[in-house]
Image 1 (cartoon, rainbow, N blue to C red):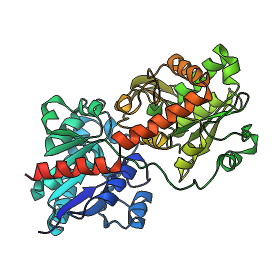
Image 2 (image 1 turned 120 degrees about the horizontal axis):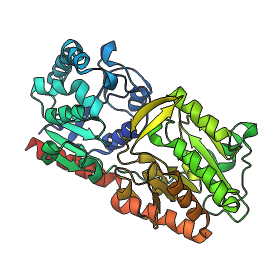
Image 3 (image 1 turned 30 degrees about the horizontal axis):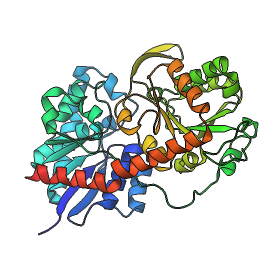
Length: 419
């Protein structure tokens, strides 16, 4: 019998981040009974990463009207969306249907909501069973989520909390499969001292003598935030939490240094965040985009995820409603796999990852005081307890969030849908 032929559609191609990395880990570990072909709507860093990994890759260019990012399409009217559907989505779906027939696809796997909405009609036209991979909180998308769920024959959710955000009439299609990671076994490319030295000379972050997880009193505790500087990641709350920590616990705050590692695709928000950080002196610094963010995680004493759930936020004086789209944070998984404790907000699937008080600390989203209290609690812990938290996190990854478990769950979903 020939292998099960699965065609994957990945809508985000310009960069190579969480959801694309998780899918690539899956593809590299699928059994021989599954044959893969990956389709992107444009050329970019993600396409190069998949090709470099030896994947079968194809670009099916999307029309310019659909090739926009940053939430612009979500702001359009219902009438405008209907026009996009008729003029662009339907024709693009027909092109994708031809590709599925040519590839003799048994199954189409859409890597996120945007992928399902952009090309899901193609699976319908080709009469190819389809899977929608839900990787984030869907409550902010409303009718778009319902449309994606209606198109899909099966739905993979990265956490139980994410499953509960899928529109209720379609939850019977859902199956939860956690993302998986493998604890690193090779030495990091760069050590802690080299990473801190790579920051601007005016940073004020001197490389501490102690190694990660072994920071003695009077030395720097390095906290790292890994992720794009975008509103829903809650960087503004993290900065405010550090300010409140300095007011309430100056002795503890004195030994804390924070580095934010990630690009800044929203210049206005990034400008506000940088201005707020500058008012704290040299406590918080920005490393920018890094191709190997795992080096920063391994150099840290603590990894922080300050994601928000939903809030009204003023950016450059303009009010915007921000919905969090966190699902099952890859940063949290990678931190745990590296035996680093985590401070994170209770959003989406994060409480399914972090055991509060055991592998890290959880706090309320959009609540700088709660986050400041978590910082104070962690900074007050003896070194041995910090190390134990990190080791418990690594044990939890091995037992609950391994790559073989992710592969097994996904292949089981494929077989179930084909039956």
